[in-house]
Length: 183
Length: 93
Image: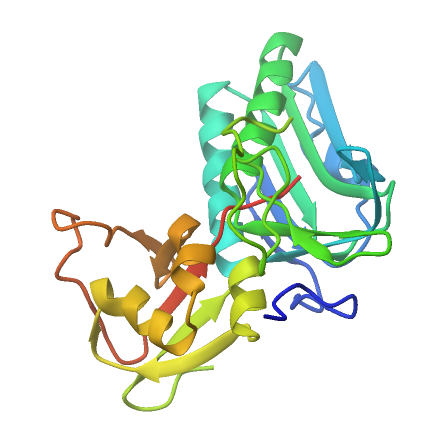
């Protein structure tokens, strides 16, 4: 059964950025390159003494296998709603000043930014904790999928919750895949 | 785009799109939500074991629970114009 992604696969993606913004929250899915300065500019505030920025970049290997390229796709309407809920919850729980979560869609060259999380708060400890929690919640819940293409091979849809090999459709059920977090 | 009269939209993502060879289609409505997987298995033999067993389902952007006899939404009916989606394990970041 030819159900493995062909090398020519191109994900559905919005032609322009999709976002939801309030004075304290910005979430965005974009086909364009990510700009970390704009994320930190959004969260900057005279009432915040700390800004934490996380930049996730795409790796060139997975379990020592060379990855040649990556692409992200999403259920955009739902993923934006989920990112907003995560941002709202983290903002309130850690009493942040502002928060921004921005994820790339479409082709993402190796070594480039795929996700930005910026948070600001009056003091540093809350900002560190909130930044990590926002990232973990996003990886766990946002309706976004990563296709890794291996050199000389086909594509594999990763699953964050597996933390191992991900799902290669068309192959028999993966055996002994442990449930663990991939961080 | 709204589905044709008497139909609902179903969206496939990631491994589900790979398996079905499409990102969306329209299926006849109304239909019991709990019969959705059986209907998809008829159209795409093997999809339950390889894809659906690890997937969640949304209807109009809300997750629905149709797994098992005592599932909260056991009697839920998918109506004309609804948007249903098959959600494989996610992998952002």
